[in-house]
View (cartoon, rainbow, N blue to C red):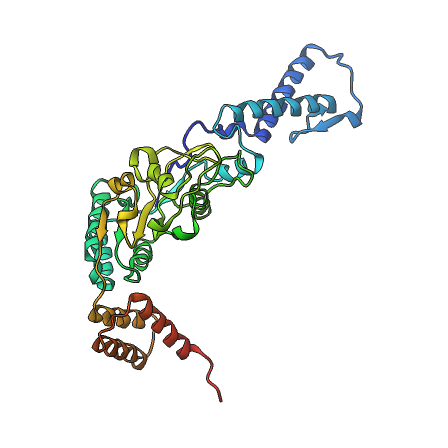
Length: 364
């Protein structure tokens, strides 16, 4: 895994931490004192309770030590003021200092691995072939360009509910080996929950995305915005809009995402590595600026045969018995014979139920 700069702008020099400044000032004082002692052998002694020994046994009067500490505080404050950390609260500054040296970005080693990931996705979700092809090309492009990590184009998956759009994104993150996060747009009516809010707001806080990256220490997670067209629009008393779709626009554009300014920390971050997967049931409800950045990929529902193949693969992964898997496939056949097409969620619920029944304690 490679490490890339995440916080942009001028960072404080690690040598200018408070303890280091104070130590260098003490050493400088002792050098001056030693030079003076050579020139003035009649130096007036100080009392034992007014001195502090350094590591080499040399002595610093308490009065001089207080001056050194006060000067170190001022010098450290000046160093912080010149950096992007200058206006942050101590607890916020401490949190960002942990990633000041950069964070990791997950990469795939070769075109062959990109092909394997695409094949794995197609094996699980053959009805989602259009998006699998887009992902495959993006993975190979990252390898061919020599990118330090995987960087996928933002994906807008449009199709009926329950066809596996979010499940596809989760499997993609699993195969690449990156963290995964889901945002339910129906519960995130404003941009605050995702990108954060300014400190002038009473409940100001950084957004879920930045908190997730700071927690995982990985720059290229897969982030799913589920049912994006259902996100509401919150307006301030002055008529300013804080919609989720508008807040996403700067992070979907590579140039602006490379230096995205957090409204809470007021510090620029490199967010261009985030893998966006947005899902909709009706993309026509989305604004044109977002559609121009993310052309919708129309997806069809799985057939009964697709669902049966998915049940067999998932059943094998969960180590279900052959009898349980065949019972699920038989239920799907019966539903199809009656003209009813279950969705992927129904199949997953049947798998969950079968797994619970096989794992539950047996009654005597």
